[in-house]
Image (cartoon, rainbow, N blue to C red):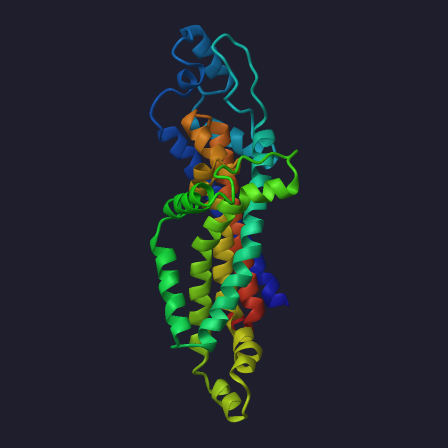
Length: 326
């Protein structure tokens, strides 16, 4: 337990350092964007005095180091600043706090990711186990072809194909996933169906292939041969003896794919007009809303780091030999 705690503490510290470096990269990347942020936000009709006052108000006239450390200090206190959108050249200010913009979008993305995970994880594990049980059969070959096809197609193509099939030719689900908090749950789930199916097809293929590969690798181990000599059924050998020893690589790939559900849903959210954090980030980049872009990117990086840490912990807990890699 002490060794595990040390490893978790070390990984957590490394994650914090990685997040700090990521924040620097994000801030630097925003500085490299061409154009004048103040002029882009206020529009071409803004006077020079208005633009200058806007720069001063948002500290855009300060050096990048001063602004970065101010931003970092405020972010550590949970203050990610005010959105640039909503400000007009007339001086009228309808901007909102970045947290108020990101929080509801993040809850929508988590809901979509959760729905996708509930569908995809059991399905991928079940198909991976079935592929090993019927290894070499027509079912195994057909499943591999289908999975390779799913991996080969980009997610936007899968999304548009689903829209064509299930929203146009056979109108079962709506093509747009414009959900809102006051919507009934059955209506909400119906609108989330096509985005969830698109993401399920994308991540299920990776998880199923990793499950199959991990189980196949263990099927040649001596303890499996011993179990066969004892007359145990193939189902029992795979489920009771092989699967528990394969949790480490399977848990890792599941965690990677769950991270993808949070940080990689941008394309799917844009295609279906789903009001998640990916859609918000695309809109913010278009309107040069720097605080929102920085916060979204930081949320993505933090989510990825936390889920990777979780994958490491699960892998170590399921395979104690990883506590002593040497």
